[in-house]
Amino acid sequence: MVNLEWYRTFKAIYKTGTLTGAAETLFISQPGVSLHLSSLENYVGYKLFDRTGRKMVPTERGKVLYNVIADGLAKLEEAELNFQRSTEQHTPTLSVGMCFETFQITLEQYISSLPFNVIISFGEYPEMLDKLDKGILDLIITPQKGTSSSIEHEAFSSETVVLVGGNGTDEQAFRQILRKKDKAAAEDWLKRQKWYGTAGDMEHLMRFWKLNFGHQPDFRPNYIVPNLSSIVRCLTGGQGLAVVPDFLCRKEVKSGQIKLVWEGSPRLVNTLYFACRKKTTYQKEIALIKSLFKKVMVSLPNKQKAVPA
Image (cartoon, helix red, strand yellow):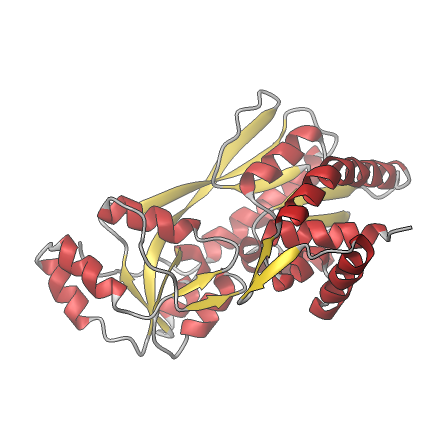
């Protein structure tokens, strides 16, 4: 009989698009992910993904298999979570969803001090909102509001999506172009630079470019790294450009490790929300996590001035 963990790994690769992303989602090693995938492919008798660079693109048979198992896996995961809760009456277990970088910046430092169990879930915001509505998650941190009447949203902060560069990047020509308010020349200069991106999420770059230049970017980043935090670390002390939320890089900008090149004109600002079900048995636990988030967001370095638009 096929190992259920193979299916879990297959789903994680399908959703993240990379072996690294699947490993981070499942909290296992990348070799373990590769082993599960090869075992499943040997079991079913055909390839489930085409490997194009670092991107895992599902084959037609892979898409069919995903459609067959997705609902079943979701029900098993929900049953597993509900069973775990029912057997842990004395210590509550809170399931919290957010993006990987948000967890690193905010909650990671406090995990060991929390007086209750916590399951951190990473994923796309629409998927997390759906899980929240179904009771699989108890709290999510999101820049997107859902439409379910059973979910309440509380705005607690905001993020500005900005253009940053390594401190070895010479952006003087770009500054002069911006002062002339020549958007066409600015776009041309930007497209000639080296860019960083992530395999799983190009939404920030696409929205920033669409807002400032009126269309989607017609180029691919030169360097694809696992996540936004990796981009910030790669830019530190080097060259290149990337579009990231400002709160992820304020410390590095303030210390001069990277440059805040441009906030855009107009600026791309996202409101950050706590989202939870209106009827929950974890009000006290949720309130504690909210207070920790607010504490961290207030303590982040003040925003730095970028190139004027």
